[in-house]
Length: 118
Image (cartoon, rainbow, N blue to C red; front, side, top):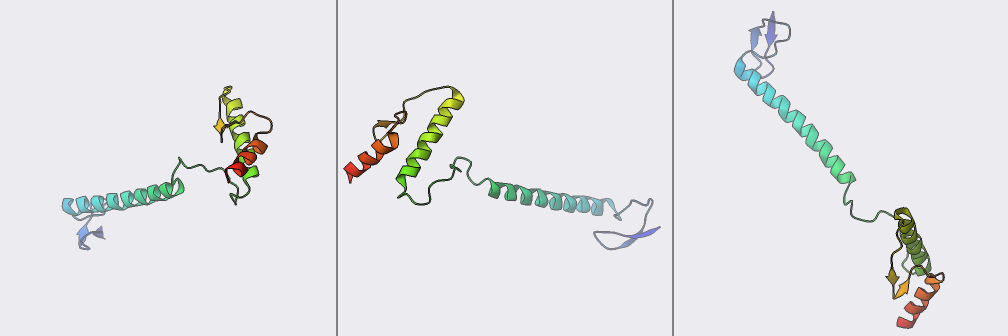
């Protein structure tokens, strides 16, 4: 059965149906090319995955669009801190602007403190 070598394009007499290369040298080159293509695909996939996970340390939670809405920001911050403490069953001391997060009127006190500083 006559076949054409995939590397050098010469025709050769194939011993089996699966033979693709005319010589041992062409077979090695073919395998090397095949491996290069495979690794190129794997690296491309890894690059895509890296782009998806840019920086896992950055906080992905939604933040208020404008920093002017400080009341909303501090309400959300208090809620997150208390939820975290409840999850781990631990009550810590978290001070923001010198005011403990566990106080009932925490947001109002922080807003007053900020107004005093201005």
